[in-house]
Amino acid sequence: AYQNLVNYEVGPSALHLNLTLGQWAADGLLAVFFFVAGLELKYEFVLGSLHKVSTALVPVAAALGGMIVPAAIYLGFNLTSSRGHPVGWGIPMATDIAFALAVLAVAGRRLPVEVRIFLLTLAVVDDLGAISVIAIFYTDSVLIAPLLGGILLLAVYALLQVKRVTSPWIYVPLAFAVWVLIHASGVHATVAGIALGLLTRVKPDPGEEAGPAERLQHGIHPLSAGVCVPLFAFFAAGVSLAGIEPLQALTEPIALGIIVGLVVGKPIGVVGGAWLVTRLRSVHLTDVLSWRDIIAVGIVAGVGFTVSLLITELAFEESPALLTDAKLAVLTASVISAALASVALLRRGRHHDAASG
Image 1 (cartoon, helix red, strand yellow):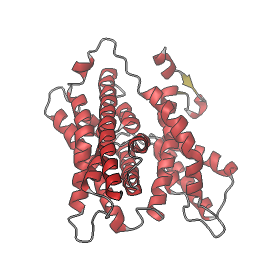
Image 2 (image 1 turned 180 degrees about the vertical axis):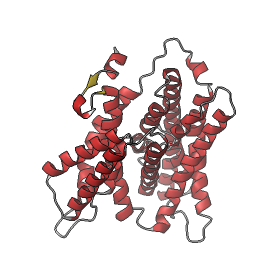
Image 3 (image 1 turned 180 degrees about the horizontal axis):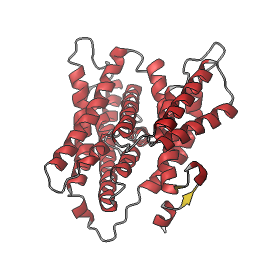
Image 4 (image 1 turned 135 degrees about the vertical axis):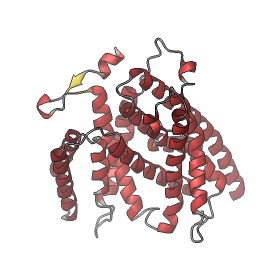
């Protein structure tokens, strides 16, 4: 029944949008998720923690390290085994911004706000890296005409932002048209979401309490976190255990690469990237943060879930057996990382309480 629901087709065939519900979740709902991520990233670049190069370098380097090391670990497991499948190297690169911040909100409430800012910056840069990987490495073929059409409409969106047009009656159809054209081009449709977010105006004009990016972020975030991400998870995370041994599946090179990449590789990469960039004379951690805080953030970053599942679907869509193994590994790694992160964050919270008391 679940598989029938996931594979149920709906949508206008004239626009080549007679997609399965699973495809609507991955291509449509996650476009909203990445639109919010694009808004957050644009805000951080213009007004937030990324607008100063010296402040931004540490979390950006941590994000890059947190993508490179897990991918290298995955390739290490899969290039050295006859049963390996290197195509899934992008899966352990991703951090789920929504779930990572949820873990931090629950277990890290006593931590200073700088920890949340560091994790948010790391996660949004990680999301940008993940969507770039999807666009470049997990796109089979590109149709130039619809892609150029989508780029043209993105330019129209940017011009409307410059002209201070505010009507949703213009923006909603325009954004949908961009999504349709990007989807038709063969590039993953979530790219449309992050592109629109990055083109949205951030700085408020005189008389405005907040810019459009901040207003949209606050308005759409509940829809993204409360509807889009859970529905995508429902359609993407289904794993049939019929006919497979879970313990055996988790010892396959694919699963080991994902689990070790997320649980071990993420914290090593995050801490290593941050440490390397602080070797520069003008770059250092803020006084509030310690290296143990960065280790805790690195463990939180191992919660891959949403974006990792998306890349899993793209990497192994032609092989149901490998898709099952990879999904099971993503779920296992995300649960382990969330549990370990909760312990680490609670310990750091007690430390900061004692230091401030």
